[in-house]
Amino acid sequence: MPAQIKVAAVQMDVTLGEKDKNLARILESLEETAREGALLTVFPECALTGYCFESANEARPLAEPIPGPSTRRLAAACRELKAFAVVGLIEADGSRFFNACALVGPDGVAAKHRKIHLPFLGLDQLANGLRADRVLRRQQPRAREPCLLRDRESGRHRARLPFHRRLAGLPPGRAHAGGGAG
Image 1 (cartoon, rainbow, N blue to C red):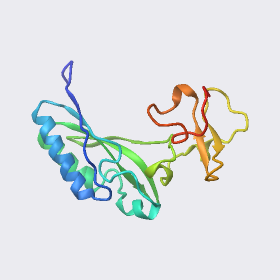
Image 2 (cartoon, rainbow, N blue to C red; image 1 turned 45 degrees about the vertical axis):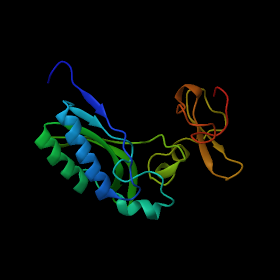
Image 3 (cartoon, one colour; image 1 turned 90 degrees about the horizontal axis):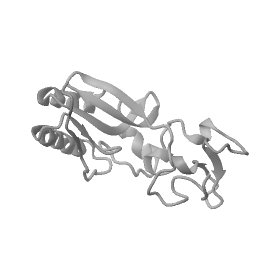
Image 4 (tube, helix red, strand yellow; image 1 turned 90 degrees about the vertical axis):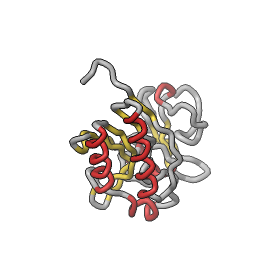
């Protein structure tokens, strides 16, 4: 591998629930970035399926295993282009599904990652990842660990992350409940 590589990041308009249409855009963008010399192309979270589902029943049919049909098509393109891609999708694992991404290259899926610190937004509120409410329940949180707070309006538990671990750019109450330095 060369000492330096060119990496491309693709911002694309993802159509919710339209896997075939989104995959066609991904493949087209991958071809374009590879033609421009990128060895690695990174696509958005849930680029294959979209993110803002109303229910688990709406999202579950779009989930697929990794490797699966879409990652195999992506691997074929990567093989032809001698390139790699990171693509976000809904991963199916038995009856569970996860907000995941796959690193795909000429030899197929090289790695996958399941998002585990899930905010209560879009797909993440529906996925079976290791949400904070299933991992950690504390009355007196330590400064460096996530904790749970019950949202008074909705009654739902929401993860509150220490200041240095909060998601930048999201307004208070969206990725966590409450404010302050944590």
